[in-house]
Image (cartoon, rainbow, N blue to C red; front, side, top):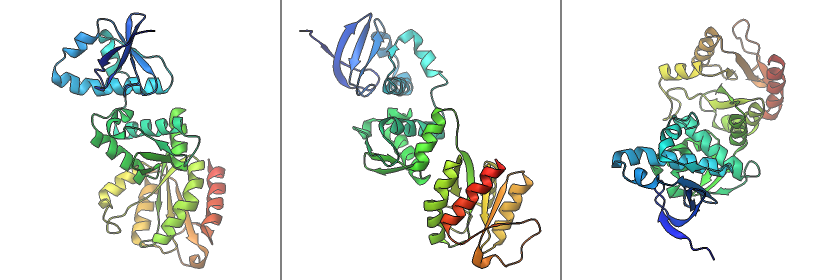
Length: 304
């Protein structure tokens, strides 16, 4: 029977069994590779161990994340001290919060059979390498941000991808991203907003858009100042403005989008469709959100 050594993984600090094979030490079932193993080239352990505390703090979480992502994709990973810079400077290493969030979406996508399928992340408090984060606080922030954006649902360490999150994970993995889309609804229309999110938003996602309510200053505590909201509008590929109860802000943001060559889709509830409006504004008239979803899909598919 093979006798295995016990050793501490440099990158995740787990004490695990180690097997020597093919010029490398293979660390089994540590947090870098929870369901497999990765190799560390002979003569690499000591150089890594002798790095300064500052270098270890900045370097080891990234290497751990790199190993975990590759291992989770069923790739064989062998790390060496001489090739550390190739990992740290790899274009595969995400740098922004958005890119790190995509890594979590892709991980959940790999481990779920479909939207709403629960995925339990064991040892969640130690699994910040899932998002190439340096600590748990950043992982929690990323998870909460994805939750706010409607990408995931989370209860403790149990995660579920929403329809939107599932499609975003698939799109990003294939090199395609959902196109940003802002929706501007009348002030105080909470029930309407909920109905749109449940019925209209999924249809927009199917069309390749990432819909999000445009938070106008004064309407909610989390809303951004006008100049920041204007900057947000510039990042979108489509603005949907509902003019069932037309407001000055609606015309302002929509006009700003049009002035910057961003397409605007107008919508209006049928009970309010008789009011006056600027020339050239021809809204999609709707009675209920389900009908509107179908009409928007037809209009946007036609214009694509």
